[in-house]
Length: 317
Image (cartoon, rainbow, N blue to C red; front, top):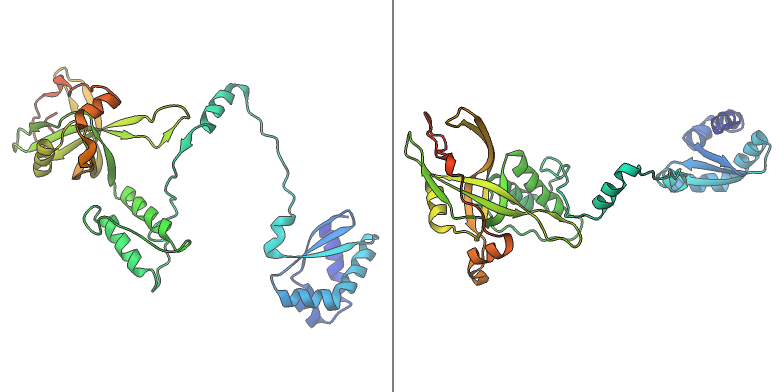
């Protein structure tokens, strides 16, 4: 006899032994969880008064009825709905690692990753009240105007009040708006070109940006990100940025293409800078020498990239 049949028979018998009011209030919402080794676990709604009423006035009736149905001497245990997971037996399944992926798995589990932003932490899911509306408003302003308003932005509160949610909301908003925030060191001095159509200045350079994970015993690796800055911002970068300096860039990602002199199409993905900041401290010394010691000397820009642009205010490289 399975537990569902036991409980159906139990409710039918109880209904004939108590008043309709008692049945609806006491028994209707009870459920059976399991029947194992003469022990029956009954799930009770999360109501302390109801449980007290059951154990005080109806426990004997419940035991006798279930003993009669199961032809067993049962022990009855009552569990609140909210606590039932503690009594759920979870089957332990063996972990099977295929021979051909075992080495990859061992490498993967040895990586150390920094935490990622929770995609569920957004401004739309943040609950705003009188106590946090100022923090919410300033965080939203930071996301809409990064680096301009409330810079630096500092959040202080007790644990569990939404600091992490707001910080991740800012990051997720920047990602949503195609906003890229980079912190890295220049691999070379900015190179200046001018567009043929409007003679607009464009500065190009590359940033070495540290990756967010490392393998034990290995040095942190870096990605080299191409950056372009237009007009006055490009002039600022070409004048003040030097190889090895640590800088902060806020911008957007773009992918463009061009045809070389042989008619072959080339594609490049880069960050178009919208804001640029110094990030070095004065005591860092000779940034260029420090960079070469860390990353090695970097090659200069592609000498074959100075082709002509036929129309529009396109990049001259």
